[in-house]
Every structure is written in C-alpha cells, then in structure tokens.
Image 1: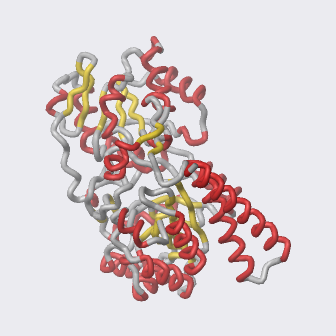
Image 2: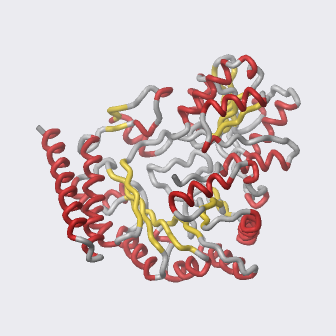
Image 3: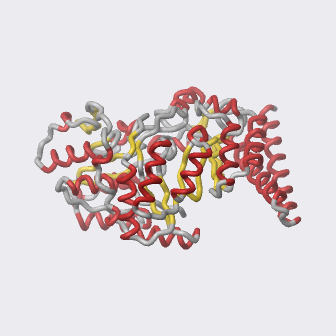
Amino acid sequence: MKPYVPLGILYISAFLEEHSFPNSVFDATFSDFTTHSEALIQQQPDVVAIYTNLMTKLNVLRLIRFIKNEKSLSHTKVILGGPEVKHHADNFILHGADFVVVGEGEETMLELITAIANNNTDYKAINGLVISENGTSHITTPRNNIRDINTLPFPARKKVDLQRYFDAWKGRHGESAISVSTMRGCPYTCKWCSRAVYGQSYRRRNPALVVKELQSLKENYNFDTIWFVDDVFTISHKWLSEFNEELKKVNLKVKYECITRADRMNEEVLQLLKESGCYRVWIGAESGSQKIIDAMDRRVDVQQVREMIRKSKNFGIQSGTFIMIGYPGETEADLVETLHHLKSSNPDYYTITVAYPIKGTPLYIETEPDFTVKPAWEEGSDRQIDFKRNYPRKYYDYAIRWIYNEVALHKNQTNNGSFLITAKHTLKAAAARGAMTLVRMTNQG
C-alpha cells in the first residue's frame, strides 16, 4: 500500500493537451476490471493508450481482448507503451495491440494521434513505433530521446483523484506522499536493470523548474512527503546544490525521500540532502559480497556503501537499502557476507528480492541458456522466469527468512529489546538456516 500515480501517462496526457488533443485518464489503481470495461463502453474512445510493465502485463492483455471482442469498441485503436513493450513488441502485436510505442512516449504519441485524427495511415513515417501490419509487426526507425526535458509540461495530476492516494498512504503509513520526477535515464550499467524506456542516458530538469512544480503541488494539494522517482538523485552534486539554493530563494520547505548510489555521496552531499529536506535516502547495494557486486557490474565498493548508510544516520537522515539474492554465481558464503553487510551498516529499512532476468538486460542474455522455468508468454511475465542457480529456488525463500530474522535479532539485541523477541527471532532464524541446509544437501544428493 504505497501507491503512486502513473506519472508517465500523466506526462503524455499533459503533452497531448498542450498540443490541442483533449484526452481523459482512467486510473485503474483503485478500480476493477468491470468498472474499467464499463467506462470504455460508455466513452467509446477512438484510441486507448495503456501503460504496460511487468506487473500490469496480464491485465493489459485481458483489456486488449475485451476491447477487440466488444462490438461497440470495434473502431478503437489500442496503443501500448511503458517498460514492458520494447522487447516483447511482436507478442503484444500478435495479441491484439495496434501500435506499440517504444521509448519515450510524448513525441511519438503526438505524431501518432495526429495521424489517426487526420486519417493518415502512413504510420511507417513515425519514429519509435511497432505497427500491426496484416497480422505481423513492422518496426519503424527508433526515436531519439527528448534532448531538453525542461520543455515538457508538468504531469496532468488533476486528471486523477490524488486524495485516494493520500488516504491510502495516510491510513497505512501515517503520512501521505506524492511522486515527482526530476530526471530521465540512468548512465550506469547494472546488468539486471532494464533501460527500455529512457535508455542509458542522463537528462535533468532545471532545479528552478522542479522547485516551481513543488510550489504548485504545495498550493494545490495537502500531502506530507515527496518521493523523487529518479534512479540516482545525487548523481550531479552541482544540480543538488542549485536545487537547495532554489528552495531557499522561495523559502519552500519540503520533506522527501530519494534513491542514490554510495559513490555519488559524501558528507557535503549529505549536508545538502539534509538542508533541502531529505528525511530518507535509499542507497543501492544489492549484495554484501564485493564479488557479486562486481558480477552485477554495479561499479561500487561495498565498504563505501556501508559507510554512507552509517553517515546518513549521523546526519539525521533515515537510510534504506536494496538487497538482491540468488544472483548467478552467488554462494552461501556470499549470503553470509550480505547478512554481515546489513548488520554492520544497520540501515533503518531494507528490501530483499530474488534476482530474476528481464528481457533486454545483460542478466537475461547471460542466464537464458540456463532457464529452468519460463511460463508461456501470455500466461506470465519475466518475474516468473527461473534459471539454474547454485541452489534450488526454495533455498532462497528460506534465505530471505533467515536474513530477515537475523537482522531483526541483531536490531533487538542492539537496542536492548525484550527477551521474548530475541527468542522468537533466534528460533525462526535457526529454523530457516536449517531449512536452507536441508534443501542444499538434498539437492547435492
């Protein structure tokens, strides 16, 4: 229950409105399929454009089937975009999509909607598209990224009910949150990360423009915190310093959290984060083993990660980190290093996921010969793919429980917590570790 508005859709919506193409947004976050279907029948739109990612894929396919089988929508063109479509475009076309927008959507959508509105069927002249052509797909020339993203309008947030998001946050977490984007792309080369939309780029909005957007949000909405969705918020120290100065110029106080990398942090950056209103920073680590970090091509030193997590707390900023287990080549010794990493750095928050390969990434290419589970395309997603690892998949489920309970035990003991909590986590950690050993030994046998 940490929902955020679909910023990509809202950017495209605002961009089309700016160019005299009115449109409506159906926000499915708090809706259901029946309501969505009824809204389509009622509106009978000429075009439906749908955001598609790993988690929404199956619902998107279901929606396409509904549109294509509903007589009142026989004229409706289906356009797909988002991070899932680039490397699966042929399949989406095969399953009913009329167009797939590859990469950034604003300029491609404007040209496509203009062509549709003018009954111009020369879609091959539009860059950044995959087109349905006599039951097969045709790929047009790739589109270049928007050079200056400062030219884009603010997202059309008024087209969704933000209060529902605020209420969901407030009810579950005590504070409401709103999301903001200041940059597009990421110049780093982590092997598991998909760059299907923005590519391996770095484009940043002017700090003054970002502050202007924050002022507008403050004037129009009542929220508590801001989530900057950028991949590496502190990538440019110059930008961060200018952002801080712009906030001071207009005396704007904000409270926000962000994601960054340890190699783009130091004490000066932490001071800037603190002054500008950062209350929580997420510092990517992925593993406590330098061997695995290097295998991921993370290009960061695990000791530096630990140091920045600790120093963040020294500056009064909460710290969070991300952990990925089950990466190719990872051994139990590497998992022990990851546990040591979490205990020694002691972040306030952390998440754990089992590595999975996303099509188009180096990790997918490296593991594809070793896939052991891959669902039929229309029945699952890359999240369900499994590959041959050092240990069976079940081992990592127990490993997550083991790490969780060991870290909770460590925190409880560090804080002089209760004996009962210590006993609970000790027993659960021992049970999980025993299950790991059993699965490992059974597999070896």
